[in-house]
Length: 160
Image 1 (cartoon, rainbow, N blue to C red):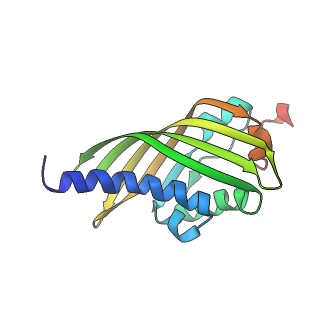
Image 2 (image 1 turned 180 degrees about the horizontal axis):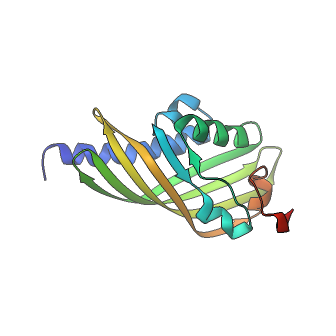
């Protein structure tokens, strides 16, 4: 283990913390700071559980704009990141973690979706910090009404 590895491990996990807290605070700058300009976010493995077919999100601006537009003023969120495992290989890294994401309609907190997701993250080094290049979210379990929370995401014709 080199002297940089402990710092790298902390910085890799910090990218996921910026992703989570940026959403929770609806802080565009913090949220965007988690991603490379050409990042990809794949929420499809999770959304398929309730019949949604969102597109693969490509590009930091698209990811940030899409998610914040979906939630700001409509959905309150809290994310908890646990069990991070990091592998650093030069200027790239891989991270797996469990993320519990609570989503509540702002106007009626009795309408919610609680998701426990597995995150697979590929990151690249940007100076001393790390940025998410690819993020794949796969659901382990959920409870509540994700259709109400994620309204606006594309749904298959059979579900319309």
